[in-house]
Picture 1 (spheres, one colour):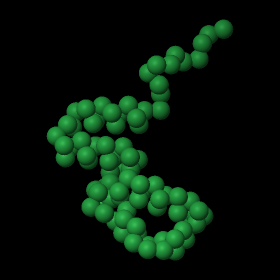
Picture 2 (cartoon, one colour; picture 1 turned 30 degrees about the horizontal axis):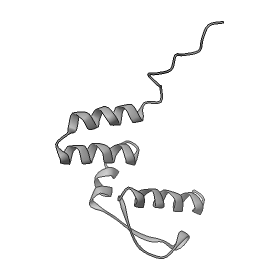
Picture 3 (cartoon, helix red, strand yellow; picture 1 turned 180 degrees about the horizontal axis):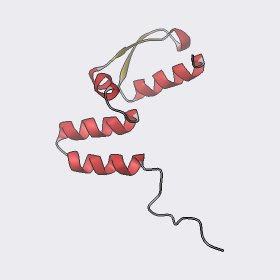
Length: 87
């Protein structure tokens, strides 16, 4: 299993984006519950922040802009940088 510190960090990240709701405790003994947003994020095969952009964009009726933002944020290649330069 992953180290406890990694699990705590992951839970804190999910609490920050409202995918988990804090109930009680601290660190290794933290009790949380999955929110409705968290349930829907768990169905998406992507980073939780990108998934939240898509879900909230869909709820607000701005699907196309949210898809564009999600695609730009999930890309590992920069469109503003050139590749390795030839010497």
